[in-house]
Image (cartoon, rainbow, N blue to C red; front, side):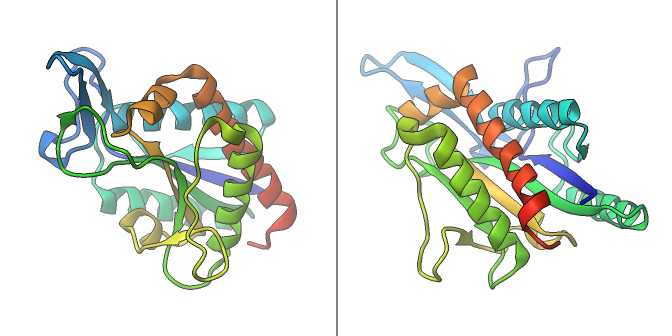
Length: 225
């Protein structure tokens, strides 16, 4: 199968010159962990870790000769509708060239509305598709399986089994507004201290990217797009 992987990394990231976080602060896509003595331990910015893992996936795809397109900016926060438009333009163009497309969107989860604190309890990895039964469900299940194979008990997992498969279902704009099969991953909770440390870890980032890469390889063999 000729496949093109459309890769998305959610939200903005840190500006390489100014150090400014390019996601609006009031959107809460960061967390400052405060020690019991009230001093800052460390800060995590979701957009940075989303890109770190997405970029590693792109490198693996490149090395394997698998076609891919990034739709996210290096650090700017691109509006969701523009991301969907980019994905759909790529899908349309690639379809004319005989390619099948899938979109993989990297995010990290959060609990609560506070931007700082000791950290929250919820943690874990989850996959998301739009509501209803679609091809994306199969891709999501494969991704979940590969993540468990590669990461094992390094992390916890959050499956929503009410309809018989592991994916959570919500019509998030980036997966609802695209014309090709699309899956969004919530890659741990950046508001949980243990998960946040994993998200910063090169070891975990490599494993997570590898799981996404193995997903693409299996989709090429197992899923009718």
